Length: 330
Image (cartoon, rainbow, N blue to C red; front, side, top):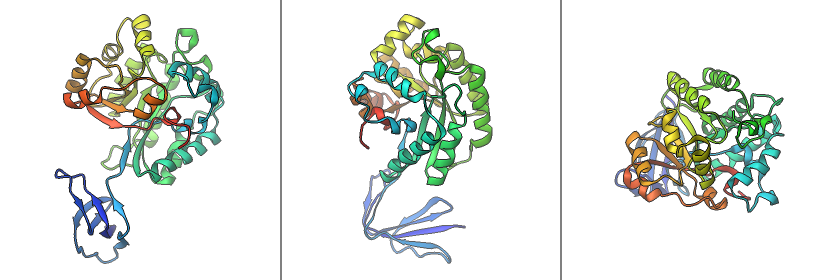
């Protein structure tokens, strides 16, 4: 049994039911799990002992929405004051040139920043697969994240509705449903680990209502449930998205997602700024989660998510950094 003892921690923030903050405490870790917290704990034979005299210890942060490849597209002047749709239209022209080296470097930078900020678990929504480029971008991310030691829940994003079909992305960064689901199957078989405390789990994540077809959403939801993996997408981020759904699909965004099977405890949405009171109630009832991206919502001028209402209603809410949409520096 591998054991680690961190001794005499200056400040230990427990976040337990009583929200205790302890001074001079020890933590005993066995096989990757916290086994005991106390004072004067004795190390077992062969245990690694680490002094914590000058340390603050707290539970690792969990980042619930990200686009790590976008780490390399900060500080582009023409999008610094753009709203979401214009921001995307400009940056698609850059992202369509993505290659393996850019994916590896951006993962090193993005994951490194998270680890240095105290984040120990992150998801990543990777949805741009340019035509003609290698399709193993997620493999590169996963292998790089594994080397860096972060717990990683990569989401296999996808776009199937290009501009010729009324979508937002250019046609040369979208894929067919067959290509998408085939790669989802490959990634789950190769990397998904359902065990408790697993370091890698695959999530399926069609990008948004304005970049994928209804058929892909429905097929992905059904397929994910046969494989017992989670589902993730953007939803209710802007008024433009709401207008698109009403005009093109004839439904509000959440109504549309419900129609395609996208609610439940295995689903979480990024943003959720424009849910109304009835929709918030339905999120709580179905145990559907929301990734709150406050910096991104501010940076793109998208709006302020009704997080107090969500929490009061019992919606599951997590925090997220959301890539270069959140900042141009770090």
